[in-house]
Every structure is written in C-alpha cells, then in structure tokens.
Length: 203
Image (cartoon, rainbow, N blue to C red; front, side):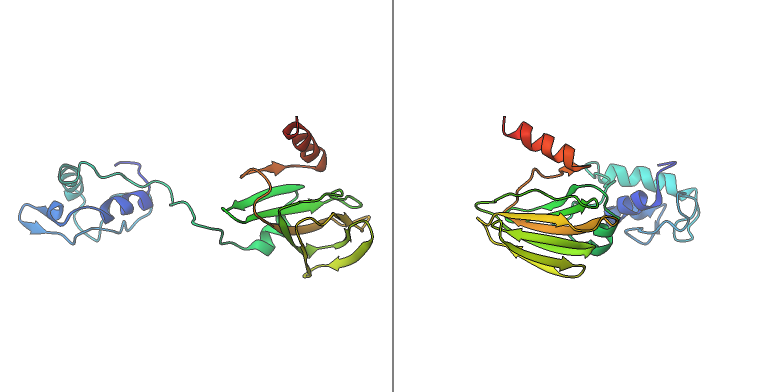
C-alpha cells in the first residue's frame, strides 16, 4: 500500500469487513475510512502506525475478492457547468454526452463561418447561443438573428443553416439533438475536419 493515494486507501478501507479490524485483542473503528494525511499511511485515525501493515494483511485475508476502486464511477447522465464549457470550447464540434434519445454538443464558429445548409429528417434540434450573434435560416427564406442567452428549436425535416454574422467574434453555442446525430465522443477541431469526416461517412 506504500505510495498509494489517500482516496484509494480510503475506498479500500471503506469496504473492509468488521472482523478484519480486530488486532491483538484490540477493536479498531471499523471500517477505517479516513487517511489523515494525504498520500501517506502514517496516521490512521490517530492509531499507532505499526498496526497498519498487520491490519492490511488481515483485511486482505478476510476480503480476498475486494477490488480497489481507482476511478470514479461513470456518470449516469450529464451534469456540469454548460455555459462555462461552451464559452471555453474552441472546437467546431465537441460531443459532451450521448444518451439513447438525446445528444449534447458544443459548437464554435469562427467569424463569418457557417455550419452549412442541412436537413435532419428525423432529428429535432435545440440551440442556445452563449456568445456572439447567429443568423438562423430556415428553408432558405425564413431568417432570424439570435443573440447570446437566446435559444432556437429546429423541428425535424427543416432545412436550416447557422451563420456567425460577426467578423471579429467567435460564435459559441451548444445544441441538443433528439435523437443523437453524431458518434459518441466526436471532436472536430474545425469545419474542414468536420466536412472530411462527413464525406468519409458517406463513402
């Protein structure tokens, strides 16, 4: 256990059986959950350090199947500072979360850049602008100027385009596809990369 980080050790002892904490007739608090100094095993709830190795051996014997959890459990859905993440993103497209029915994606358009006219026949799409001003064009004729803190819903089957009208400021937004429209984990650093990926997917 030497060199093991405190959080991992704490997780280990969190699962130790009660009978594993009895040494030389002394009953120690069980389970022992807290390592008092980060990254070290020298102080455990104020108990004498030399008991630690004996306790570790006995605990391993009592719980041979115990697996130490070294990483946090996977998040069930998405929980996070979406506005902050959107403003920090500089990729043309970055998929944050993909569920069975919905996908959360960050987007950043450079000054004067556009997504390009497209139609999602079976996908509804929600947009929220966090920075800049966007021009939304529906079915090549209906136009809307959308500013920061405003949102748009594009129904399935609607031809649409999104244009960054600024010549100096990036357009930053996030979008929800229902159902998902891109492979989970997709990152396109720029529009050229996104177009190349789309062309490859259609071959």
